[in-house]
Length: 92
Ligand code: SF4
Image (tube, rainbow, N blue to C red; front, side, top):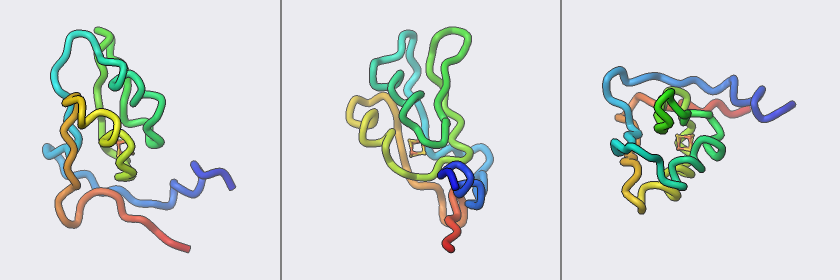
């Protein structure tokens, strides 16, 4: 099966009001932020009507890709969700 079908089986518990990924406010997105739109496997990043990048970390798999790319540049702040929240991987 496709990886998307497999991922469907993972559960995600949203910690309402406490997103674990935050984007620094910007007018023009940096190349790193733009890259996240295509790179995030959970499609958490998207362009809004103003051409800025927004994040909706619901469904984030905590793969860390965006962190590697955009945290060093200061474009995002990334922290693991609080205990009990976030992705719950199902094996088997
Ligand atoms: Fe997407 Fe991975 Fe970043 Fe989560 S950690 S928002 S899945 S790139």
